[in-house]
Image (cartoon, rainbow, N blue to C red; front, side):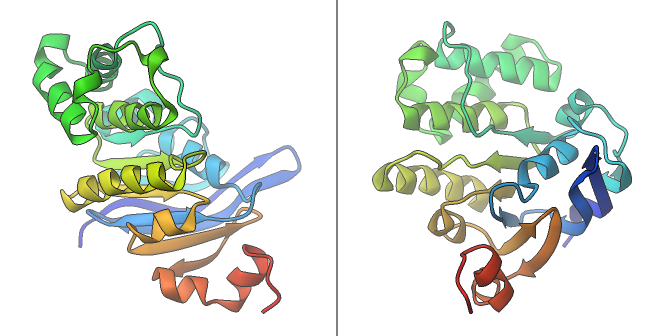
Length: 240
């Protein structure tokens, strides 16, 4: 498999606090990787390093074979790094379609007319087509999560980063959203997904990466990772 994203010995500190400590892993094209870890483990910081919102103090990030360690966030978006955020913050006064059009136009550097067909297709794929003309401020939480996913897709990603997108949903809502994400992944989308809802992750991902105090303590098949004594003790709080 071709590697789409490669992190090599990436570290990041804020003052005396090292939040990402010598992190290395690679993601093959078309794979779904889940990231878990306790609160404060450095998961969101890791995403910010991948997207270019933060610059590492050490190490290298390679995307599509290119060293992007010093590349600004907007350039990475246009290369194909798409991201959803934990708390959806759509443009509430704009319609669902208009939210997508803005993301697609800025993310791809194209006119609204040039991205119109793609926006409609994404709305269909994320089950929001019937809400296309609804103001984003009138959406339910599940619909807001779907819109957050759709906006990330609208930028034309090669890799899709999902940040706790299932958080706050009911069991039924979570299952519905997971089904949508599974379809996107089945269509070939490479996904890196931070999530506390483990059954949502394991329904989609082929590998799990575990972070603790900024360090990778395990990466591999979900069953093997969750059976690990160290993971159960650190992440689940179980004395194994």
